[in-house]
Structures are given as C-alpha cells and as structure tokens.
Amino acid sequence: MSQRTATVTRNTRETQISVTVDLDGQGRYDVKTGIGFLDHMLDQLSRHSLIDLTVRAEGDLHIDFHHTTEDSGIAIGEAVAKALGDRRGITRYAHAYIPMDETLTRVSLDLSNRPYLIWKVNFTRDKLGQMDTELFKEWFQAFAQAAGVTLHVENLYGENNHHIVESCYKGLARALRQAIEIDPRAAGAVPSTKGVLGGSL
Image (tube, rainbow, N blue to C red; front, side, top):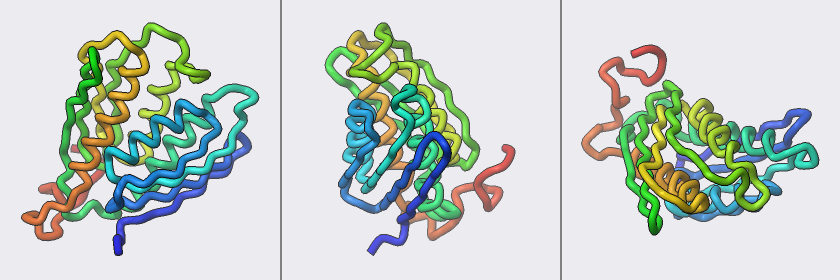
C-alpha cells in the first residue's frame, strides 16, 4: 500500500476544495470543479502522471473562474508536496516533450522545494469552452508555488489552442511521473548536496 498519499482541504470565502492524491497510483481520477475544461485538463494530469487524483471544488463561479482555477492549483500542489514529504529518494529532475498534432510543448521541472514558474505559452483565443485562457498560467503558477516546483513550460510551436494547453498539462504530468519516482540507487537519500531541499541555492 502506498505511503505517499495526502489529503488537503482549502476553505475560503471564495472556494471550498478537497484534494486527495496518491503518488504511486494508477492514474485514476475523479475530478469535479464545476469548470468543464479544467476538469478535462486535471483528468489528463492524473492519467498521464499515474497520480491518483480526487478533486471536489465549489467556488464563486457566478463571478468568474479565477478563484476556483487558482485555488485548485494551490490545493493540488499542497497535496503533492505533503505526499512527497522530505522528498527523500526521488529522481527530482525531469522533462517531457509532448507533441499534439501541429503542437509541441516542452516541460522541465525540478522538485526542489524552491517554487518558480517560467511560462512561455501564448494563446490566440480568449476562451476555451467557457474558460479564460489567461487562467491557465494562474493554475500553473499556483501549483508550482504550493508544490515547491521549479517549473518551466514552453510551447515551442502550435496553432490549435486546445492542443497547446493540453500539451502543457500532459507535459507536466509526464515530467512529474518521472521526477516523483523513487530512484533505487539513491538509497533513501535527499537528492541534494545540502541534505535538504528548499531554501536558497
């Protein structure tokens, strides 16, 4: 039975969110945020990372999707960080190139416990479904901050906005899948010469 599991609840005046993750899962997902396109992306994140993911979110969607999008990123990031613990024995670094038809996206990450986002992704549409495309950066920023991930997301080229954003989530998924893996050669060591992850270089 996996020990790398965590549940996080986040309740504010704007959102009420519960997230459960199992880092050693099979990519099973049960996601309900009230935002159809975001659900689709989080399903992809779970399926391609093999992280089991359950999300229940209720937010102030009558205003807009911003708070629910951002807070879901925070809650999922917090759950991943909690499940990683002191990050002992993990592979730590990973990257993925994801092609989707005419689109190619590169995602590189370091589970450093030093959050940072580089986002080089542009959209030519304001919305996908009912979701504002500007909110995808907000989700990735929130996730990176809460999970303690140095995260670089670059769309190298592409035309279809759906393909572009989906390749970003799939790239994050595939890179996470590799980075969270336990390295059998690491003998349970924290993957840093400092002996601890986080803080300054």
